[in-house]
Length: 579
Image (cartoon, rainbow, N blue to C red; front, top):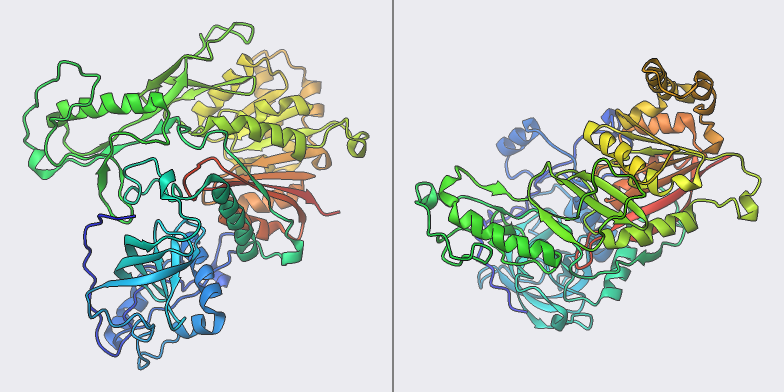
């Protein structure tokens, strides 16, 4: 696969000194960390001279990101712990590991040939040097590929390179599967050259590695990671795209370009240098993209007309912008109830963040603002909900759980109520907590649309649900409703909302950074019987589970393929309290 990547300039290193630089350094001691205990790799920069070392000591130093840590674990496994540790040696009198790697001193510029040995959890290929003492990270590769790569950066333990071409494809490379002409340059996809079953296997392995590296659990205590839940759609699944553009300098004073006769079609006579699309892999610039095969047909049709609109009106922009393309079913009339038939076939695309959009999951309708968060691949939400109902939540029909008392559900980070409403039928009462007042408003609206009467939604930090025993916060909320002549009795308020911990399931679906220490501490204090932890970042999920592992047993783990053709893998973990 030929890659037409612009050439980057590699900064020359001084002789007899380490050529490598690390973007961010880990210097914070564990004693000073205020967040939940995290697994970290400590990498110290090798100072080139005393003055530079002094400056670096004074500079702000941040811990490695979770993705950088994950890559470091992969490299350490490939080259061996002893060799890896030697790369961290601060003895600057030693020869550069790059020069000792067997790849040469780059006499022919910064291009080398290498064979890919493994893949990182983030979709990049990793090659090991002939002397097995150095690693090269190259995107859009599979194990077995022999590639030509252009090096553009040396880090402390590895180099980064662009893929110029594949000289010899590996067994798992299938370029005939590629459906996007921008693949290999656009940062959106990594796996289009890999068959779908292999993609699912790679994501299962990524989940397994995350728990081995970050959960603090012995391998024997980590359950076998289940097969990745596959998406019904491998392409044309995204119902949201956010293409963007930067305003070229030469267009700041540009005049309006002619309006085409048919404004719904792509206007190809747009200003030179205007790119409307997505980010280029490894660079801070935008690729001009006319269509995205991951987007639905409705999304791509709207992308075409939005591109034409921007090209026609580019002179009115003072700077670049991000566009919103959000597919939706036709919204339901605000006065309608669940008994009113809905049109579930007509799809529209909206571009205003405040427009109401609707999606259907199994037999439930969900509405929210177009700019708010909702899963971008609704095709997998039905199978995921069925998996949760059938596999993760005990059924009263199950002999093992037949004698259990009433069950309660607390949905932290509930958004517009996807889990609270979809699972309400399995619980006596459900409570959703969400910081966004708009999301709470739509969650209540969605409960009404779906005739759900046992779900309540409260605005506030997720951490607040554990502030005091028996959810006094919730009682206060309903007391306020009582003051407003709510039809609920005070007895119902004070008695039934005392959710006993041993009868409560909590669903956690936090942002990518995971849960904070306050939330986890209060979770441990309350000790709910069961935790269902859903995550869009399996590494931070594993770190959070490390924090609670002495109090909860990890029962099940499964990856969820919400984003086929990419390395992204969501995950769900089931934990039961230790008695």
